[in-house]
Amino acid sequence: MNTVLSRANSLFAFSLSVMAALTFGCFITTAFKERSVPVSIAVSRVVLKNVEDFTGPRERSDLGFVTFDITADLQSIFDWNVKQLFLYLSAEYSTKNNALNQVVLWDKIILRGDNPRLFLKDMKSKYFFFDDGNGLKGNRNITLTLSWNVVPNAGILPLVTGSGHVSVPFPDTYETTKSY
Image 1 (spheres, rainbow, N blue to C red):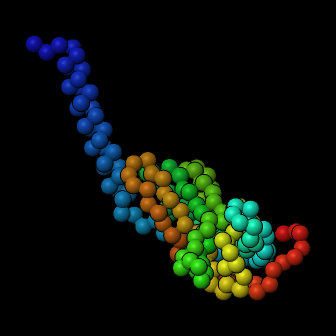
Image 2 (cartoon, rainbow, N blue to C red):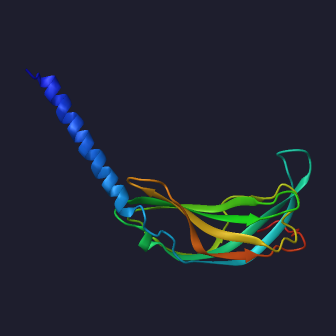
């Protein structure tokens, strides 16, 4: 007849099938939800320096410092299937050497239960804004965009761009002081 092990195996396989169906149900209920929200980005200060690049030949490269404000209400993104959000502010621009440059300037993780409303004032970039040459000097079209990855309990990891960005002109001259 059926042994204890074969009955345990049948019970385990049935339980696993039910769990897979429930997980798929969890995923499908939030798979098509709109995850984009309005974002307000304002830049209050831009400083440009020409520094020595130690990663390659002894050339000088542009280093930008950006002070910015971000306002966004991410409350509508959080539902029962969202574990956390990974936010990042990126700068996109083109130079004569590269058609598209993308640099992440700042990031933040918002867990479920944290305050999902952003009112950040006078934030400085968390990461260096280096260009591999002199592409920042006088560049009039550097676009800052806030994007996020939604980390769900079950399902895919959507990459969402906020509906709002700002174009920042960089100065034509380099800053020579030591402070930022």
